[in-house]
Every structure is written in C-alpha cells, then in structure tokens.
Image 1 (cartoon, helix red, strand yellow):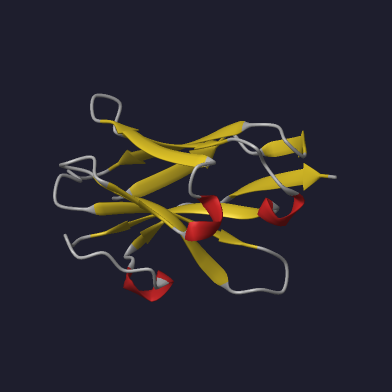
Image 2: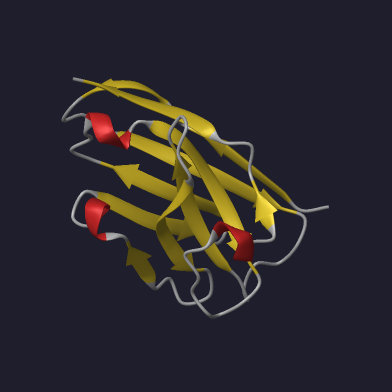
Length: 124
C-alpha cells in the first residue's frame, strides 16, 4: 500500500523559512515524478514544484523560482521542499503527490498518490 506522509508545516512570519518533508513508502518510486501542490481556502489545488525521482531533475512554477527548492533523499525515500523568503500568498495546505510517468504534468488529476497535506501559514 502506497503512503505519502507530509510533515513540517507551521506558522512563520513573512521572509521566514520552512522545510516540508514527504515520506514515501509502499513501492519503488524510481519511475515516478514526485510533486508538491498547494491549495488555499476556496481555491484550486495548484502545482508548485516537481522532481524526477531517478534523475533528480526539478521543475518549478514561476512564482516560487529562486525561493523554493525541491530535493529527495533516495536512502530515506523522502522528498523535501525548502521554502525561503516566504510570503503571505504562500499560505496554503501543501500536498505531496506521485505520478507514475516520466512526463511532467501540472494537473492534479494526473497524480495517482497523495499525502494528507500539511498547513503552511505565513503572517505579514
């Protein structure tokens, strides 16, 4: 049974940093793309960043480029999202997700597995 478990969310002031973790279990993810999405209240679930598990290549939406860094630790089967220079507009529930393909998708409907989410709140 595949499980994705996020942790690391919290309350931080604008300009601060947080690191989210996504612990994956239940299968081998070498042929998967792992991604971070976020969802603010009343809004759609938006793609944030992704990493190809096998190669470590990454992709970011423009709004987080230069501030967020996605990485993975193969030995721990864990993906991370380092978030720096946080802004109030980054406030959302952050989800990790897995897609069994080498083709990037920014649509949440293309991802088979999801974590339960972790709240990130950035105060001004």
